[in-house]
Image (cartoon, rainbow, N blue to C red; front, side, top):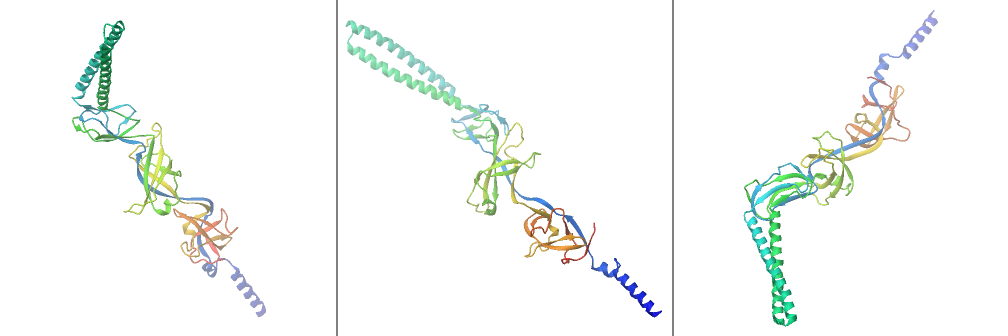
Length: 358
């Protein structure tokens, strides 16, 4: 009986040792959470902000002094080329024009009479009724009167120009960006009274660190958004990259220009703009940052599920953006759809048995 009993005991112990789920085996199985690896593009955008300004802009002034009579243009008003913006009331301009016109008319009358007299004297000189000296005197008189006419015409043209200068017209299609005077105020010749900016081209100036400026050139395309508008990103062209940083900040000014159609977009000068730069734009295997063991050390690695066990795979970090990491591994070590451990892996070792939990 004893040999049979011993055999049964040995068999029972052997079966118990192979039975899964025993306390000893459960203690050696690590519980982990996983996600699937995807292969694709990781893009990390940096935002820089500035205010849109018109590319074409001008400060407008009267060329003559006077008092502002009317100013129909208002701040923020869209205007067309040639549209009336303001008028100047200079009481001397009207009488000056009338006096200049009268002087011109008098000079023309005197010149015309001298021309007729000269024709008559030349006819008489041919018959000997008058001497050649009288003809020459009349010719000299006519030349002087012709010079008077030229001066009178110039005076009248100048007076008319001053009258035109008393009317301020929009030089191009745009929007009034600044108004500095009100009707009834006196302005000097050349004093700025308002400013106008074009609508079809705007630009934004942003300040960038040297590490980003070194990657930009004139003509590069950058994405630009206007946060207050529900519109898609627009493409802007880099028109200026400063090689000198600002003294206060050490940052470098960069200007980006946008071409806009006022009929199809609400983008306007004065709005805040967001310039987007690709800080990282790489293609690789994309995993959560939590999947990387020792991400900032010298030995970054991941654990992937291999049946009921894990395999440790060294990883090279290409870029990090928004809690995601683009990595590369040795050939065939990782593929799209593989399961990578994101929790419970801090104490894992290569080949360790694991159980995936939700």
